Image (tube, rainbow, N blue to C red; front, side, top):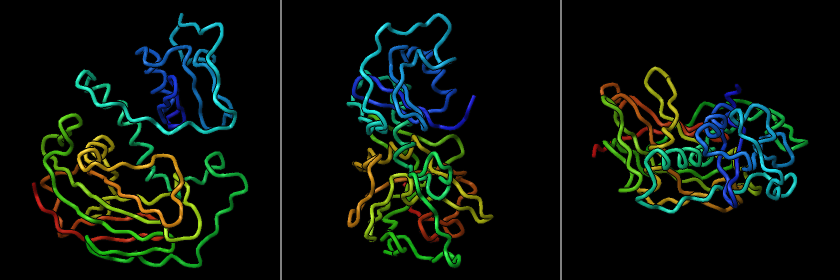
Length: 277
């Protein structure tokens, strides 16, 4: 089955996603996705009952004779609704929900790679830059700009755990968390699409680029009480506070030789000192 995360499903007024087709199949087998739930994927104009998607539901799981009302035609899935904190929710359920939400939040993540016509607005035409300037280099705490953004890496710390009593996360044996809090502001005169916002990566001395740990990043955001807009555009003059956590080898990591890469409309390398906690 496809490994592209393009599927969403809705329960009442809540939506969850994106998921791969394999993940949707697993949700159906685990009865988290019912035949009467509505599903949608990129490229469709309408929501459909899960039972109408061939091969999605387990054998013998039929759909309802009359599916629930379909949301507006051509309307993208509504923003995910954060679940209410409760001690009765299992750790597996919380991890599944927050992992899916964070994938969208850190959509920070799908920037210039979205060249696929299904993911771009009709009529979009990319303009090639006149030249590729080398990444500018700054330090943690410095305020720097690109043509579109004003950005600041506010803090970068090595952590043995992140989160609060409800959403705590610890690295695997031999690992450590590098927790980064940062902010960016749209200083251009046009809105920035939610899927083209800046992203941060951790870069080792040999140039290997690390992506954020989704679950740990969400736990850290909850700890820092960061409330981010998931699917809305970033309008001119608006500043966003964000967080990202990376899991790396404690033995390999050395703040004097590792770097933070801010992937925006112009790459920026950030040097940092890490305070262990």
